[in-house]
Image 1: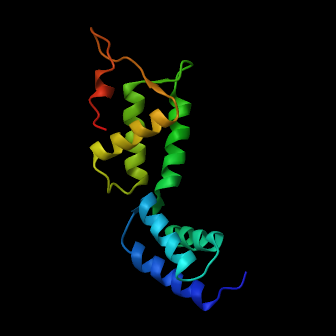
Image 2: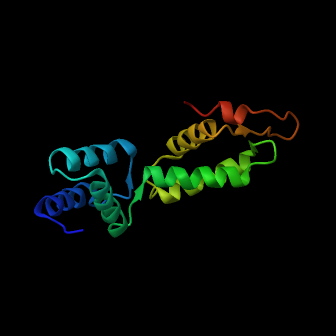
Image 3: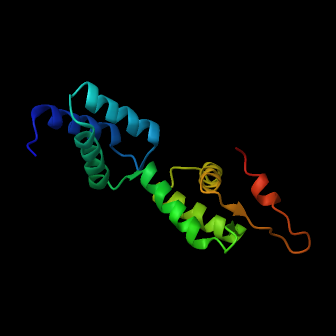
Length: 142
């Protein structure tokens, strides 16, 4: 694949936009890809490759990649009834924050992991010493 002037200019735009960042969420990635396709006349695969290369170069995580890793981790930690224990949920939240470069607050990371659990049809396990409830999970704001 030969890199033309449009691809070079788009690459510079992506590097400028992602400079000093550790996490690129879906909306920002979509905006960059739209710019690459519309303004710089690149194919979607080319634009996506340039964004991924810039992310790898800048040691930055892309939200969809972090989500995929977190879902796999959740599925690995689930019991045979597809339930996630609170302790395991907290581990996945810590993993998510570490991959996102700690730019996310713990509350935001909990919300994102909860959404991933719901999208993957995983359920919270009961937790507690005396009264075993799912209250810990319900308290995570949507």
